[in-house]
Length: 379
Image (cartoon, rainbow, N blue to C red; front, side):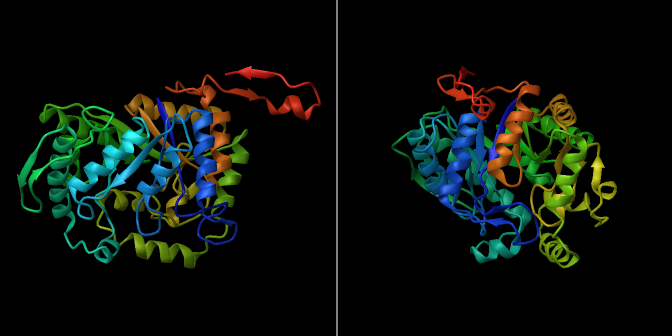
């Protein structure tokens, strides 16, 4: 398993649906989270994209210089970026990070935001454009000279001069729950991403994507995006979950619902469906054992969290692993503190692929706290 964390470039806080307890999204804060994730042994970080976020490419390039091991999952936006420019940006980020770039293909799901960026293609047309974009992007990064004439994109004698470190190109992460999205994923994705649906639903999606990829003569691996609320006891975890949305009143929930229902993303529609009851109690929002849909009341995208004590949460993660997921992109509020909590409580219970850097010595806090001479332990 590979465990990723999240850089909240749209801001952070202790509560959802309110400015109370909000935390400014500053570069200094992003750096703290990235360096914590780097030290704790997370495989990489997802940097979000969209109108409400800082630019992911600039953030990734900056944080690459502040970290040693961490990989950066950064969005390319077909329709908003040209494939040749995106290929040069990808190669540059991969080179300056010494092979730590990963590419998250985001086709977009909010028509209003896309219109504000000058993109007026409908849902299926955007996936057509994404297919053309990736065909060009892949060939350029393979070192080929590209001439392409498609329905949406045209390139004549395109090329890049500086190749990426990773061959043939940095891995492509791709999400899309519609038929159009799955078809493009089957053709291009190295890692198919989905949001945190109940394990049985997620397993069905894996089977569908795997079959579609096999029809293309390809193999795809799978990743899942989840929030985590883990505490030493089950009771503490559910208390923390309820506290997270305690200031999300009906007005905030209704406002979020109005925005999210305008999305033409099938994945977002599936997330919306998980909390259609609209309640805020544990009984109404625990849609599968330890899987809580409360976050989706006021947040777009990933709307579910695994909630519980370390044994229960690790067990649920391993259920997803058994279903076929290899990469887990996790997050928690606030992200700095929760990065430590997840690493401390869950990492020892999971067969993760990476460990804290072997060259770093860690001082166990309790030793200093008890006024005993420091003992540095290699981990």
